[in-house]
Length: 125
Image 1 (tube, rainbow, N blue to C red):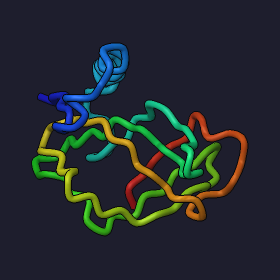
Image 2 (image 1 turned 180 degrees about the vertical axis):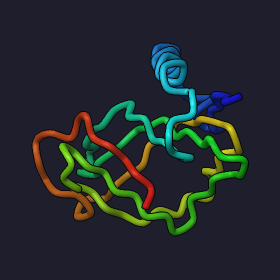
Image 3 (image 1 turned 120 degrees about the vertical axis):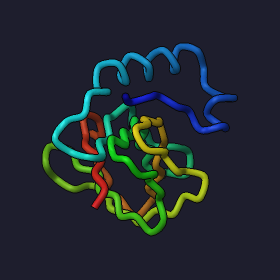
């Protein structure tokens, strides 16, 4: 059975409203789809360093932990890839049968400048 977990730094810092929003998304998407790993969008933003922040709920439906060591992620909007980057995040290991929110930061230069970033899809290549 899929469980929702928050990484330690998220557990300490997350606002109650954001926690409730993520719990709602989890409850709507926690049943295993056709894929082993699914990234459900939560929000997108551009920060003060002009980096693209893509927050998703990463569902690991597999029986193995999911680590992010030299993992290529693509972010697409309307089937057009607008961001592409390789991630190594030592703090992010998602246990088997666990869903965990995370914000992936695409530095300036790793994404196409545009006005619309919402309703995109993050995929692990």
